[in-house]
Image 1 (cartoon, helix red, strand yellow):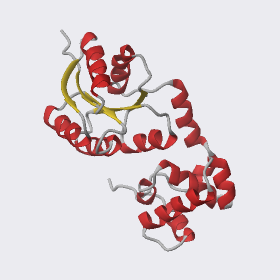
Image 2 (cartoon, one colour; image 1 turned 120 degrees about the vertical axis):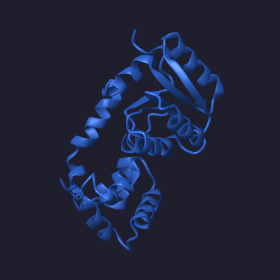
Image 3 (spheres, one colour; image 1 turned 45 degrees about the vertical axis):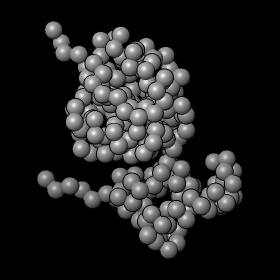
Image 4 (tube, helix red, strand yellow; image 1 turned 90 degrees about the horizontal axis):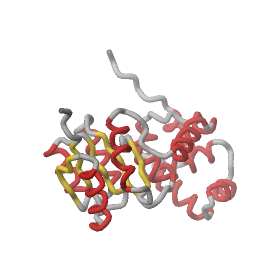
Length: 219
């Protein structure tokens, strides 16, 4: 007999977490731990070594932060994010953090076991619409202005990445604001955040860092 899949469920909204747990148990999945914040989710996952962990994106402590830690310390655990929002920042930041799946909370809980099994099997555990958005992100010619795998790029949020690629493409602050449905002030705030993260004084210095190709590993 095949052993049941072992899963940790982390979400600070207890009624929702209960529904998720019940759906997984009904599908024959062993829920080996439940958490309400990022710290407990990380600790439970490391301690129990499950096949997968479901993480609420916006739970206390940050689900994406927990995903990044788990992916680094327990790479064999499939990380699947749960969220109420299909915001691009959350989607792309989750993928950069190492998530193997991204599921909206309005999904039928009965669909979660299938999503987990796909993630564990190495498949994309997300809706076709979200897959299309991910593909579009990587196909966009503007993205080739920068080296996505560079250490500098890894520090940026998805929105900061969008802002900087558009600015590097020659768009003005007002044009970037209009394209991303932001105010010009918000665009400038994103730029300031990028300069601080990259520890540079101006946009051109930031562009130069973001264009640097990632170093190749020896061997």
